[in-house]
Amino acid sequence: MRIYIYVKNTALVFLPLFLWAFTATSIVRVWAAGALLMTAASTALAPDADGPSATETRSPEIC
Image 1 (cartoon, rainbow, N blue to C red):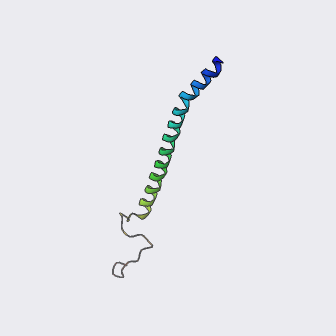
Image 2: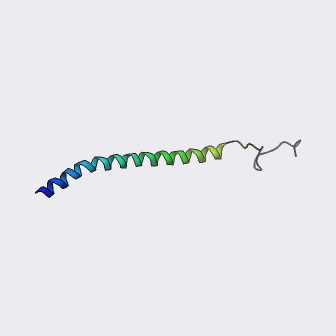
Image 3: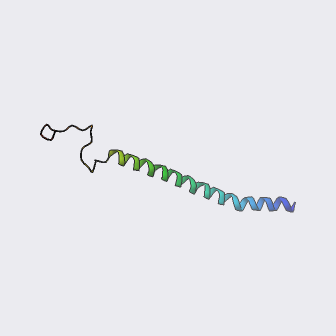
């Protein structure tokens, strides 16, 4: 009976800690995935700093 009480009390202590850790990990994973997605999107959509790319049209005067 003492072992049962010990196990029950241990579970009551560690279960909330586990749930908090799991929640924090999930939030960090979602944040990191969003950060990576936004970085990729902003990189893909950013204008070129070194001028127009090969796929952009140029005026005949420049060519």
